[in-house]
Amino acid sequence: MYNVKSKHAEEFIDHQEILDTLAYADANKTNAELIDSIIEKAKLRKGLSHRDASVLLACELHDRNEEIFALAKRIKEDFYGNRIVMFAPLYLSNYCVNGCTYCPYHMKNKHIARKKLTQEEIRNEVIALQDMGHKRLALETGEDPVNNPIEYVLESIKTIYSIKHKNGAIRRVNVNIAATTVENYRKLKEAGIGTYILFQETYHKESYEKLHPTGPKHDYCYHTEAMDRAMEGGIDDVGCGVLFGLELYRYEFAGLLMHAEHLEAVFGVGPHTISVPRLKRADDIDPDAFDNGIDDDTFAKIVACIRIAVPYTGMIISTRENQKCRERVLELGISQISGGSKTSVGGYADGTLEDDDVTEQFDVSDTRTLDQVVRWLMERGFIPSFCTACYREGRTGDRFMTLCKNQQILNCCHPNALMTLKEYLMDYASPETRAIGEALIEKELEKVTNPKVKEIARRNLAEIEKGSRDFRF
Ligand code: SAM
Image (cartoon, rainbow, N blue to C red; front, side, top):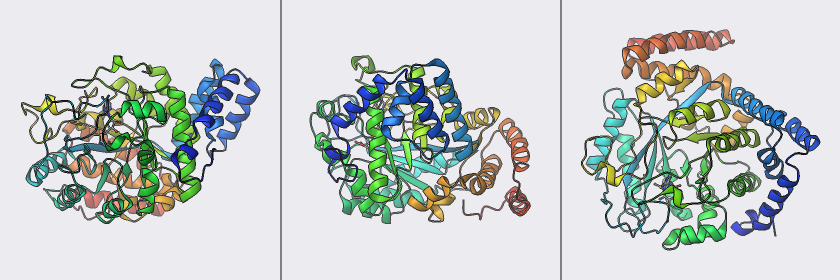
């Protein structure tokens, strides 16, 4: 039944193919010869099939695992350099008609405070986010056709893009809302969204149906085929992910890569990003009630294997993970992280909201401010980037992928990242963070080998220093 180009979820995510893949990976987990040949293939930096990548994930040979981690690190450096893109989630509404058993927004939760932001409240949230220094948001809502119809999401996007507070601006709005129709995806595209993000939660159909017992999200095929509809609606940057902890991680890993292969086969472009959320404690949700939790070592191995399997796909980690865990996976393939996040509706404008805790979607493990996260990244040698230039210049979908696959990202993005960091340092950073940042920019600028690019970057940095904010990052 497996058919990568099929339009049917159960054919491009074929259960039997996943089981066969897992059996193959298990049978070869100590097969040094095969593992070496896959590592050699991976070194070509063209990615790996779900079968090959699953063997690496299952590999039990210590020295080969060390090689896998080292290769993931090298690939990350080659494709992304030391830039880390910053973003924050913005929760618009926690009204939801679904019955997801792992999410506190589920309809049966009667004691969680339900809240939907008005456009005025969205303004206040966005101003608070701009005042932190954020330029890129991920919009989040529960699924509720009455309270959160597409018109509400579209109006909110318009509001967000319209707000210019001091030097602030939200330059890219990514959207994480429930699976919808081609027509609605088209409207989102017209509203100027960046990436459309939708987590699969689990690729295992039977588990999926149990975990989503009621509501529109119960429909596995409709959910799994959402990215196809999004692409048909003209959105060429889509963000996939699974919620680790719900099902066996090896199953999810193979499913995730099959999904990426499917999008690439049908639309010529794989997912723009992959997120790796892990199930967290939340209002009436106890993660220990789920059997498939993964430890930090396994989590790191998953990140490394995804990096090797789809080198050109960005990888996102949220504040669900603590500082220590984030530190580890940043080295292995993560290219985007959130900072200073609130997962409650209205949590940014008024951090002291009394109902703050009870509208929260999940417990945040990394509670540091954006300034602290930026400083920490720089101290570890990373460049926090607030750049959205690709999207603003129309380099999305396959145009972005071509840039990435040719390893051009580094040439084009490195100076842009430095300039957006400079803007951040000037406008929002604490004096200590700014001092570290200025030194880092000087050092990183020296790495630019093209004298013309270096000269332009220097000139632009000087303009930013003088107060200009006219650049299209
Ligand atoms: N409602 C939209 C949907 O159905 O896809 C997406 C928005 S939801 C706010 C974003 C994601 O949070 C979900 O896709 C899910 O993976 C994740 N999530 C839900 N409950 C969680 C929990 N207890 N811990 C960690 N992540 C959770």
